[in-house]
Amino acid sequence: MRAVDIIKTAIGNSFRSRLRTSLTVIAIFIGAFTLTITNGLGAGINNYIDSQVASIGAPDVMSVTKPVEATDDSTGPKPYEPTDPSEVSSGRPGGSVLALTDDDLDAIRAIDGITAVEPLVAVSPDYVEYGDAGKFQLSVSPLSAGVKIELAAGDSFTEGTDENEIVLPTTYIDTLGFSSNKDAVGKTVTIGITNALREQTTVEATVVGVQEPTLFGASPSLNEPLTTALYDAQNVGIPADSTNQYGSATAHFDADSTDAQVAQLKRDLVDAGYAGTTVADQIGTFQTVIDGIILVLNAFAVIALLAAGFGIINTLLMSVQERTREIGLMKAMGMSGGRIFALFSTEAVFIGFLGSAIGAGVAMLVGGVISRVLANGLLKDLAGLQILTFTPAAIGTVLLLVMGIAFVAAVLPASRAARQSPIDSLRYE
Image (cartoon, rainbow, N blue to C red; front, side, top):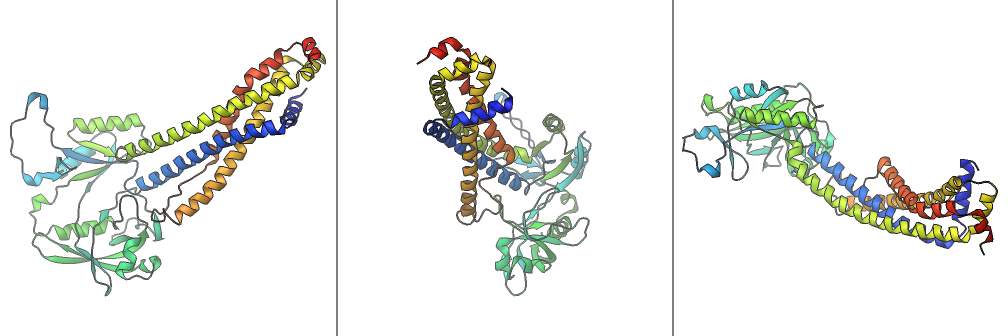
């Protein structure tokens, strides 16, 4: 019997007892449906997290600070040494970092693996204004290199331009008096900022795009020329030797660097007296929690599939018992035990494929409907979130996993059929 004949015979035998096979397929369907849904949920959430991470930093950059040396509690507090307050910048709640200077930037550039360094300057505008709509408070975030913006209209910043450009979030459009997102693109807004002399000046900027809000806020983004213009306006009245001090810097490294190379780069920064933090460090814990939850949900689906595996064992054992004389006849006609084993195991794999294919297909249909309903309802404020995302690779993995479980479940009954004596089988009543 050829392989093709074995497959055809196995498929036909699967439907000899339709009720028993249907119940087994339903059990497999439940496990495959659950596993596909949980995988889609994990993929959807992780894709959204990745897109949000891209909005706060590129994967090939790290934030570098100069932390205040920590006190070793085991040796007691260190002697007090006065520090120039202008050299200290507030860091995380409960901590502080020393301000970076131009010399520090040069030292960071000299570290092997660092390709470029940019100081991160902070500006605090007072308001933004357009036309007669009035003045509104403005809290901005300078756009780091490599950051991707989810745009609702317009474009991202122009490469190499000297013009002041700003990207407004959708939440600012109606407030500033624009009729739509597209209407805002190309318009000029006025930004007010107060300097150290308590004098308020203004800077004009062109709106080049409108961005969707993210999990990390809905602040307008500034290009480098606009950030510089606001920074210079803000520092009027500050001593010249205090303006070249920065809370942190953005260090670029090779995008193809391995985890080990990035870890070594961080150690080199520590040895030089600095601390480096990548976007993955900032968001990694959150993704780990999400992956852990999805793993637990997948475990429940696998348990359901294992239970379905026992159903396959029962189905095939009953089939072997009912077809004892048939097995004896096949052996008497020269069919080997290996081919009989292949016949029954193929039957089990087909049942597994049938249940998993139906389960995955229904999961994709139901998941698509759920995603659309949630995107237009409960999750409408989270632009770009597709809560359930199904990929061909994930669906293929589910099918192969279920078929693998079905094959393992078939080993016992298929082996029993292959070992039967043809004489005893033909005498079986």
